[in-house]
Image (cartoon, rainbow, N blue to C red):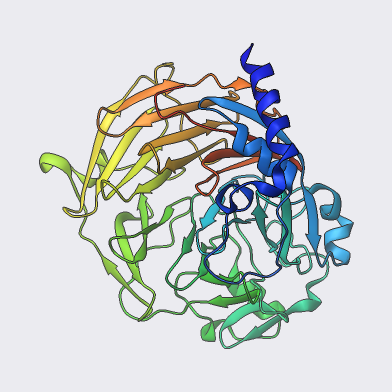
Length: 418
């Protein structure tokens, strides 16, 4: 029997006995009560359970759930879901919720929004957690800024969302201890000009980093105001949660800022980690430049990062960056990491990294201990090839998920390079 026929046979068997599947297979339960409560799709769960190592399958079309206001409907979000956006394709896993979160604005067209979404694989559903406020223009507050207020030194909407929105680049992270989505919401608008537009005094504007927090349960936005020393507002930096620190770190390496900082969310203060380059090498030479993609590996307590054809590790314990591998810019032995067209995630079961390259329509695995990259060849359904895709690793179902609008594809990595 061929692999594809064997997979279909297993799916059929599981679907026919779906109501008798173990709870761990039927639906991965979150550790807290989440809103909205969603029922797992038995057929989807059966397909996921039937996937063997190295196999992939199209799961179907996601449902779209939420309060789709006039702005959301104007841009057809009630039909398409969020879709991947310019320099905003990072999804982050919320372990306590058992779902993946997404936010971030396009460069210009078709919209620039502050909406927030979450995706539930077992229920095959996109949930709109924060319906968008009025759309913004590239450098301003849009054609209708009537929903924007200037209060307490901050430009925000009447509903509390950020009024100035940027890309996420790699500046999106989930903080499990506070159960908040964090977004380093940087953009190049002339903020003083916008403050005046809304009747405020620029001298009273909050000048700190625009690190916004979103509570996915209450759908509440909040700008996290800090005091004391802080990193610079560098575009396209990296925000990642580090379990051993219990906080996120913010990293950038360019003319705007060279450093890796820890954000103490409990006390709302920044601390420079004093990161250095390996073996006396410079920070600039040994750490990744902006537009990087990466993940935290809790087993090794390192950050693993890809920028261009170079691979980097950050040892959290020693505060040391190392460029562990670099290939020619036109080489084919490693992927070309960039936040506009790749996403890079940790695969907990194997301890490897998985990088999805949307530009090349390829998936790569990375082994941190040997610095080895392998291009993978999934068996079964081909990965969707749309131009506005998203991807994340779902550890509850042990699959890599690629979402093309509302079409959902899942791949079970074998852990051996297939």
